[in-house]
Length: 412
Image (tube, rainbow, N blue to C red; front, side, top):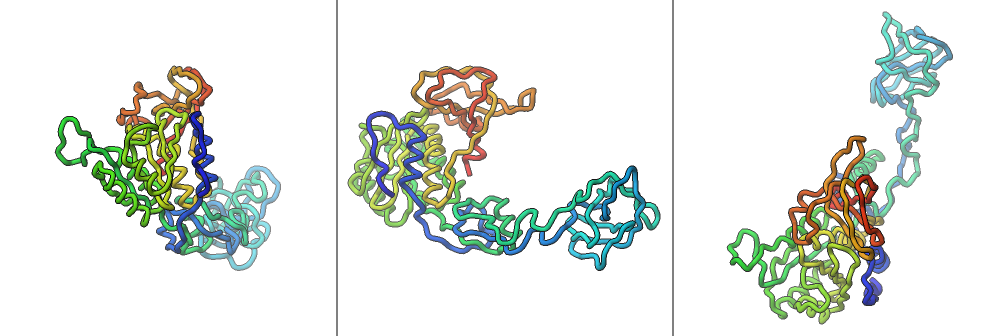
């Protein structure tokens, strides 16, 4: 990492914050080879090259009848001379006036250039009636149509989803070289916090943030080491941070990161390395701390439950992906139709919790959660994602197109 700490009193835009992460951080883990069945969610660390064409030969795209096309109308009567199941091939050639029964994935025999769907054909004794109007090449997948031998089909930095795993299998790979999982230490501090399941006095609260953050980290495929709730003492905080820095790739906590706020974590991080307090021009999630404990990156998130979750999604997730070696750290988004009115002052980007419903025209419609409080965690449960309202925007009206950040894409 180079310097990510230069900032002034002017609030930092989200785009600038993510750009600093992209420029200032890189992959911190080594590589390992894993069986293909264990590659889901991992970050690829090699080029995957197709050793052969896929498909390896011209094959049928469906069950039907294979023949050589000729111009004509209505149906043609062709003599059936064979049958080609998937996994076998037809010896010899098919000549004019002949057809073979063929199944999806079977190689196309010599002399054949067209496949008629079985639903469009009629058997007639030892012959078949096929539609004469089919264009030459219909329903034939050409050799190399999916992948050409020698082509790079997967690249370093790609996150392995089900489709990437399947593609690797399609070119014959049984294992892949991937980045080792990022190791993240997570903890909370605060005398007011109690562990869920334990008795608590009325003035205390259960530690929800640590569990939501752990779940978000789990979804990104990292290894989480949970230190629990640390005693609210400088010596305990400093000792825990020093120990974590020796074993982790990233340290994450929440609360105590506002400028001017008294907190042992800020002092301990500063004593053991460096800390930078950012004021982000977003709502929820204004305060953020980035720093280092020794050589280990440190991320301090806001203490309010919604602020902690949203800030992790917008800033923490890109940081984790960057440290994990992922080539893309972009936040998934799509356009939806607003079904609400909302006004705000210009200057700060706001993320509104909303659920999606299907409108009368079939398009997805965003319905805003009534409360904008950063402490209402139920709003995140009832929401499907976040409506991104730009800093310069002042109003959203029903029918407006708005950017939507779906939780299904962010929690992964």
